[in-house]
Structures are given as structure tokens and as C-alpha cells.
Image (cartoon, rainbow, N blue to C red):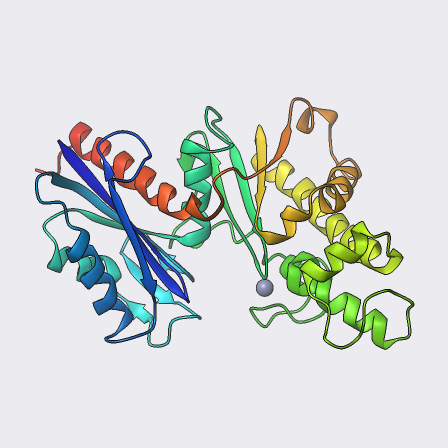
Length: 318
Ligand SMILES: [Zn+2]
């Protein structure tokens, strides 16, 4: 029997899971803090070594990493949450250490792969996945392939300009979708309105968060409801544009902001109808929430490792 090793690298924790040749139940898994004794790379190698299967052959290792990276060359350009990770040849480092093929992917792309193969998008061939939390990330599957682009940098769905005069985005540019519709953006807008004297059950101090605003909205607070409607409207208008570009059969929305349910999803659905070129884009379109939660990244890397193993069998290197 063979096995696969999936690695999910985040700014605060590293998860490693060993999966059987088929199925999505891990044989064993463990998580550790990203920072601690040794460098993050040493910690990853240590955990993979610890969990390395004794009786099964490892058919592939795949890792999801934060930040822009190139899956073609295996280089992480920049991981904002992991100091020192600039132009890091992560794939080569892991390949030199372990006797198995290695592939890497951007964390949002890997979550998209996970939801496509094993989650809400199973059975679909054209999928848009977006995660809306403190930031906004995305991944797109078109005609059963993850879209990567020339340097693997495609489908940054949160970093499109919605308002050139808008507030600064997490990336530093102005008015990106992430700056208008993320949890951070919802909190910032609410804080600004409170500072301007708007009435609300939310106090100015401590500053509101996407979660406390969601609770206030559910209690009927007009400002909190407006903050979510505003974000949902920006999000829906952007998704409307993405429908024109990608023409998916399903849009999967994940991340903490989406946990607020109808509060954000109703304005998204309403905004979607505004600008469509043709009703065909919306015909049979499914807008749904993600199913896999925190496991999306791990399961996405598992999906990638399996697909690459399949490709190697079909088209051997030598
Ligand atoms: Zn941005």
C-alpha cells in the first residue's frame, strides 16, 4: 500500500497528515506551532520525519504555504507571516530530504482544490472558491484544472480594485476587494462610523470585530447590519465580474465572515444580479458555503499529490 503526506503551513501552526492511498481519513496527523525551537523549515522536516510511515511507500508529499509562490519551480516568493521566507526553494529542500516527489501550492489554491475534490465542489468541473476572513483569497478550477498562470500567481481574487480611492488593502494598494469586504474591512468601516457618532449597541472601545459586529447585527443593530450589507454588496459585485471571466457552475465561499450566514450571503446574492451580461451566467449557478473548514488546505494538498502521482503514471519522466 502507498501513502501520501500532506503539509499545511500557516503563520501560527504547521499541520502534517499521512493519508492512505485512497480515502480522506488520515492514518495519523499532528500539528505544531510554526515558531519555536529551530527554523520553520526544520520544524516541518522534523514533523514529517516523525510521522513518516514505516510500512507504506510514500507516493507523494504536497505542501500548502501562505503567500505568493510558484508551483512550477517550487519557490515561495514571500510568506508575510513567516519571517525569512523570501525566495525559499521549499520544494527542493523537501525533495532533498525525503525520498518522494514533492509539490507545493498557495494556501487559498489548495483550499480550492480540497473543496473541489472532496468538499462542496465535488463533481463540478468549473469552480470558484473564495475565502473571506481577515483577508480574501481565492482559487479557480476551470475545465478540471487549477488555474495557476505563468508564475503560479493567478486568481488573487481579493486583490482587484473595487474603489481606487478606497482604504489601503493588506497588500498596501488602495481599494482592493479585500479592503472593502474582508472581516478587517467590516470592522474598519464600523469603527469609522462609530467614531463619526453613529448610534449603535457596539461600543467604540474595545474596537468592534467582524464577530462582535455579526452578533450586533443578529440583535438588530442597524449599523452592524449595514456594515455586512455593504461588504456583501462589494463581494457580490466582484463575484458577478468573476462569473463573466470564469463562467463557473459553482461558487464556494469559506472563511470566518461567511460563518455569519444570511447576513453576508443575502446581500451577495442580491448584488450578483445587478451587472450580469446575460441571465445564462446565473442559470443553474450554485452559490454555497465551504464544507471542509480547517481541513480544506490539507485535503487540497492531498488532492494535488494524488493528481500528480496519476500524471506521473500516465506520462513517465523517463
Ligand atoms: Zn490588495
